[in-house]
Image: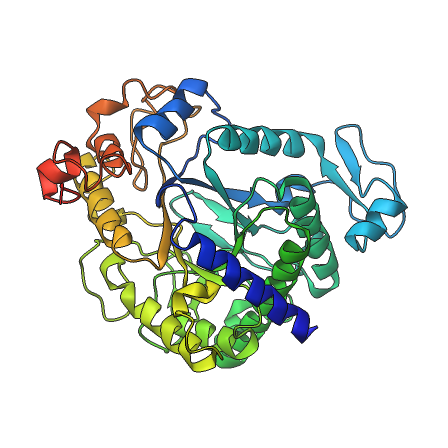
Length: 451
């Protein structure tokens, strides 16, 4: 098994040598709340004006399998669901453990989204997470998020007896959509107990804070198991010529100290810290597995922090990964950049509370500055800000904090030019950045000017 994994790594290295620094058409991408707006004119703007290289989606397991529980034998699915695998032959071919009823609408919606991106040569990234209620660990607490004004259970891991069901779902995803997907992010913010929730009936959070290092080990063991299963499935079934599998991290970094915070509503938030998780993953995965890093560097690009990474200090993360790669690699003639562990996907970030919801000038500056950092770091292969536009279905006059365009902008983006954020996005086009002075980021911030 280890020799097979080593072979995968060598194959990956060969592919990387051919395609180094060409993982997406352009590093700039989007994460959009309007997943079902497949307006052709909108996509023409994505490609021809903004030069979007990648689109990231939250890809929810609980949206696919939300009704009947799995079975060892074939079962009758409800009308709006379809049986997977369809027969014993497919079950054996994919190495599936159980039969599942997946929602037909889930399949058709995602195929339409992926096909639209393929049509416009936009790479696709998905975040694999959210356990269906029937498969969650009993007693998983979730947490109340004031921003969403509701209690969230999305972070709850599957119970151990349902790890096979998770693996079946990843196999379904890779087999059904693998030809479209280039980037897989496994779970969300795995160092933070809100989004990678290991609370159970036996171990509620009030008990966990009494021995946080014991439960940190539990958290990391759980994530590593889920991660390994995901990597093995994707590498064996994905049809893409090249794909990346990422761990997911918050921007918390410098301190190894476990942070325990009690919120106003009484809930407990435990942050295990990125460095602790990375050390664990290096000791358990090393270079034997194909894994990269997705990180969420929220905040001002050039601000400093004792405990958190900002965009301008991502070199700290890169230097750590470089050190570990160089320590473990056997070929001294191969650059650390040829190993997947060197790659960084800044998959979620925004200027956040530093800018008011409607402060588009400050948000535009953030787009310019973050791209300036990314374009000068070969380790960073893509950027997807949270979020491109507020949900147009919930059209509201008030913009939200983490969004670059309000919902009032038309679906075809024909009136988006009046917003500084849109003009900043246009500046990052590979046809404009560094090739002319006649664009927003150069005029306003002297970034991306002609060299």
